[in-house]
Image (cartoon, rainbow, N blue to C red; front, side):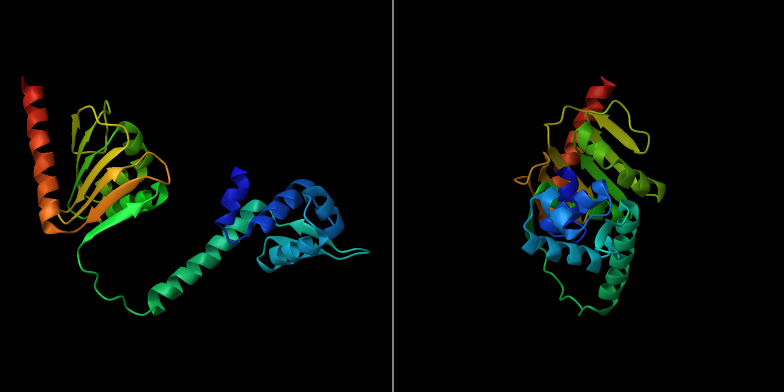
Length: 231
């Protein structure tokens, strides 16, 4: 089921993904054979098989009877990624210019959407990054944070990690599970909960007053933690 769900992200319908997995496992199949193995009606199986061929996920093998062969998974995925990159470049260059978005308080819902926003903020950071988060969340964004450090972004981290080689300052503290506080370049803040669920919610804003309040709160916490260390 997990394989099927992931295939949906590459432009296949649920029926097409089910048929693709069957072809990939069983080899060349006729429409009749694919219908029997998947339990999908013959009236729907040919639509799915033709859809796979059109999307570059299956080949036709001509003979006494037409058979369908799954394109190897890596080849299919690589081809889809190459196509998406071309579409991405086209849209970035040609889509009408977006009107300036007024700074406000934006609610971001769902774990994946929050992770995407977190990554984007870290990638766009240029000078300084404050982060308060438990170890498991820090670990999940390790590559993005390390890349930011390598390009010269100063990272101040409050976490229950024992050590973290790519941050400029690590202050150890107990952090509530799922709780994140991120400030980048004193201009944007992301705060809320990230447990890995669809119900996760974070607040994102570039409002100066919220950024200032969050920054002061983190600075005060940093001062208290440093005082505790120095005692």
